[in-house]
Image 1 (tube, rainbow, N blue to C red):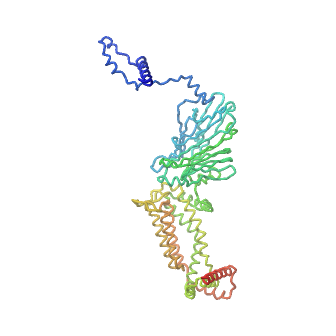
Image 2 (cartoon, one colour):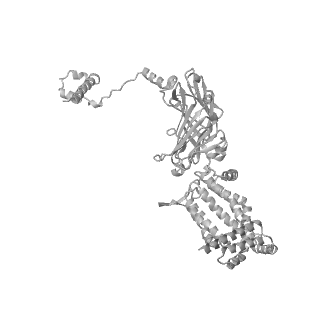
Length: 604
């Protein structure tokens, strides 16, 4: 027997001795009067050695000492169980925890997730706020301490206070919820904190995993990010469509920080400002119940914390009317496009949309009426464009004659066409300008409809949700750049665009490759828009049909024979008219290009 075996045997006997001394069961009284049992049977009844567990018992004094080491003067509030209080109004249900006196969960009353369950905008199992203070060099997380709650009502307004006090100092967090709306007033009041805290900035942390609220997880991840506004008015955000780790250090004062997702936002807005901060975002691809993991670590100036820190929480939808009332530039949490497009959406599309909402509850009807209103607004530009096209059609015989005369020499043909345009009084680009002026509206709608929370889960005809694509057929395979479904509104939009293009090509002077290329755009949009919001493709489809009807009406109203007579009269009047500077420069450029081509041919 070696040394290790001998040591193990001694330990085993020692454990057996401990067990039979302290843990063996008491024999029954009647067994004392019976004949002594064989030793073998006693051994068989004994429990195996490996089932013996000896747990150390920590005394209350040791616990108190450990808590004091960790929490110092705050140890009195440690080791208490977590309890919850709920407050609510017409829009939200907010659950608060006594641990840290913080918001634990937020549910939006009037919204559901894609499964039909209550929409949890802040989930206590995934999201948490922390306040971290400096207590004599120890960083104390107040979320580990139990606050005492008290609830008061002022009419329809509810206030809940969470108090942490030992009689000498106190920290009071107050939440004030009005009878309606999505904002919660938040304040921190303190007393005699200088006796227990170092005068360093307080850390405010908020880690937030966005709950999956929409069926299309990838689309949700492309439309979620952290956004912020600095005290100097500088607004910015982390890359919205990125699924990689993104972060940024905010060196100057910060007025608000928001966790924006496609249709909803959770945010904190300060009355003064955070001194500085750090924000980040990332995606956990293994978690299909969460969209993105967003985070903020902000610094509250100690002077604000020691006196009174005031802020507001916002938990609500990305509705322009709602966001605009929250804080300066807070409407930036609604994606409305870039450049001039937000201006078009803010001052044209959204006012029309919200005006119609007052009279109609069916959003399919509202979209149809938006089309009609916008077409009426654009009617003067459309009329001008059609008049220009009518003039070009009236001059088609002369233009064909010029092409035949200079067959194969495009530059000479173009020069003579320009001369003809000047004589009859036609501006060849006048028909394009009205169309170009309409483009900002079309592009603005491209951003408005997919992001309009008003369309979320609103059904129309076969579309169950106008904020996402309408699928009438699921494919057993995926077509590159198209998807694994067929959107009927997108198909109708494409067909109507092709029909309108064909109708126009019968009466325009477009020839050659351009006549074929004009059909490529509708085909491209068939692929691009197949997975876009059905509200958008429905709008484009109705707009095409209204435009087609408008074109038929204009053709009946416009007298092309009369236009041709007027143009011929202009031609006679302007036959000796001096060329304009623009036309002269254009002709000079054409001549220079023609000479350059001739020189190239000679060199060859």
